[in-house]
Structures are given as C-alpha cells and as structure tokens.
Amino acid sequence: MKLSRYNLIRNINEKTMLFNTKKCLLAEMDENSLGLMTKLEQGIENFEISDVESEILLIMKDNGVVVENTVDEIQELKMEHLSAKYSIDFLDLTIAPTLDCNFGCPYCYQTCEQVLMTDEIQENIVKLGRV
Image (cartoon, rainbow, N blue to C red; front, side, top):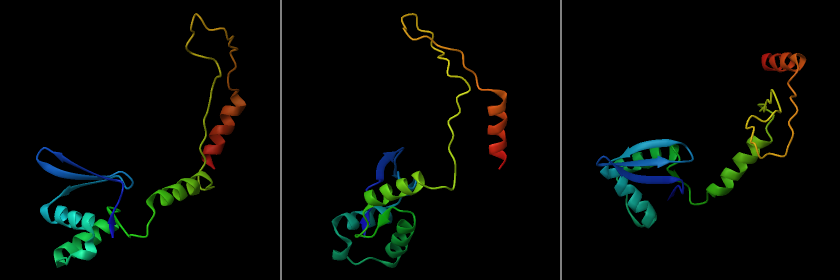
C-alpha cells in the first residue's frame, strides 16, 4: 500500500487536514491516521499495524487516500479522461446565440456581422433537451 499522490496535508486552525484532489475528499486527521501515514511513507511492510490502524487503512483505501503499490494513478486518470471524452452517455453543447463580438474595441480591424440564432434553431435546441 502507498499514499495517493493526490493527497495534500495542511495544518489549519491547529487541526491537520487532508484533502485528496482526485476524490475531492476533505478529512481531519487524528494521531492514529497521521501515524499510519508515516508508516506508509516509510514502507508499511516494515511495521506491524494495530487493529485500529487496520480499520483506518481500510477507510483510507475506500476513499482513495491509500492505493495499492501496483496502481499507476496517472494512468488511471488518463483512462478516466479518455473514457469520459469518448462516452456517449452525455452530450455537451456550446450554444452561441450570436457570433457578434461584445467588446467593441476601437482599434479592432474586424468587422462584425450581427448574426443571430434563428427561432427554428432555438426551438430545436429546446426539443433536444427534452429527449
């Protein structure tokens, strides 16, 4: 077992807080948890762990604070990204009701045509949302 590379530990208002950026987990760390994390950093195989530490280890593993030694977290993240990118489970739309620039910079050399989205396109977008 090893600590996740996505853990951040900070002292805030006299409390030690752990934030896992991958799982968006925030937890207050007690002495047992901090002691276990120290053992993990030094190689947990070299230490005996108590029943309390064993329970904490399971909770940490369930929440992504601790991962198996064989886990490549960067590769996992890449796979999650690609899976979401090519998923057909959801549709993202960028809707541009107008292509007219709203800055109106006096030095701009581009001419802007006022092209607006037609009522038909608006209605079709609304229908798509109802599917």
